[in-house]
Amino acid sequence: MSNLDGLKIGFFGTPDFSLEFLKALYKKKAVISYVVSQPPSRSGRGKVKKDSAVSYWAKNNGIECFAPENISDKKFTEIIVKKEIDFIIVVAYGKIIDEFILNLPRFLAVNVHISLLPRWRGAAPIQRALLEGDKETGVCIMKIEKKLDSGPVISKKKIEIKGDDTAGTLFEKATIYGCDLLIESLRSIVDKDFQLSPQNHDKATYAKKIKKEETRINWENDAESINLKIRAFSPRPGAWTTVKGSTKRLKILKAKIIRNKDLFDESHSCGSVTNPLIVKCGKGFLKVVELQPEGRKILSANDFINGLTEDIFNFE
Image (cartoon, rainbow, N blue to C red; front, side, top):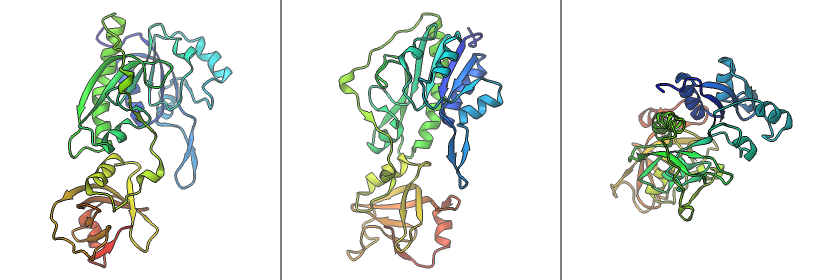
């Protein structure tokens, strides 16, 4: 089976990341019987309701699309129960799916999860891996079971976390590897040439959802941990700080650790900044490379410095 010709898919997903997997299935000639996504959310200055990336693309490609507020909604379930499908594919849908829905496909309901299970089950595996300083992450294709991200693994691919990787670059790598891995896994399941590898539940860790208060930088922390935070939240939602005397947020999207101990003296507090945009931390120093002032475009450190009137100031 060179493509996925004729395989009928029910796809559950919401953000841009999910969309790349839906497109890959579509390109490989799978029949997308329907798509299920989160309801439209309000965004932008006008707080206008917008379809998710997956819903928008599906509608524009003539694919039947559902966005139930409640996944157990009777009208919704009555419709999809009547549809004959071979697989349910779940990629970052954002809600727990009822067990009776997972039992609908002829083969399996499978999930694409961005970690090396059982490490980092849950909502934010890439961000948690970076925050903890992990040296590797990966992609797992797993059979979905009732408990969150606990099902047996069908296939996986390791991804090295390099020193300059951010959440953004790791998602890009995971998308490239993950799309190929998903297609290969579906082929192996149809050909009955696969194994289910149970997870070691004793080694499971949970990647809880990122809270807004986590994204603020505390300059009293050490430079290593602050840099991990910057990488974990780049490009979105962005680790942020403020300049003393201002309430406007300044997102820091890229930085590097500086070892020079002669940049500041003891009179300078944590958060003190000097050109070329080097910040004193609780331990060590960070050089800001890329940042985004609130309401403005992303700037290099040099472009930001050119607009400054002071050589040294404080971040809070």
